[in-house]
Image (cartoon, rainbow, N blue to C red; front, side, top):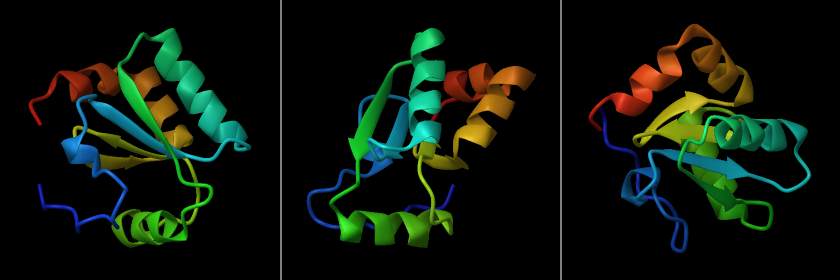
Length: 103
């Protein structure tokens, strides 16, 4: 896996956090709430990082993911996309596989 570019000061890199799943979110986003609900329902350890007031964080996410939307979700430091991709991984059984994989 290619290393992620360093995030801006004050924003933790997903690879440096103790949880296998990291979500970059905003509080008003329905897809963010849906992703969090899915993770809680499955009892999956995760860290949520609110990027609403952090333009540098959102710019870094665009650089890393090539997406302009939230949530942006990382599993073991690797971007998997947003809620739609998370839900598809869950439905197919691949989410468990990715969570069990060695980072």
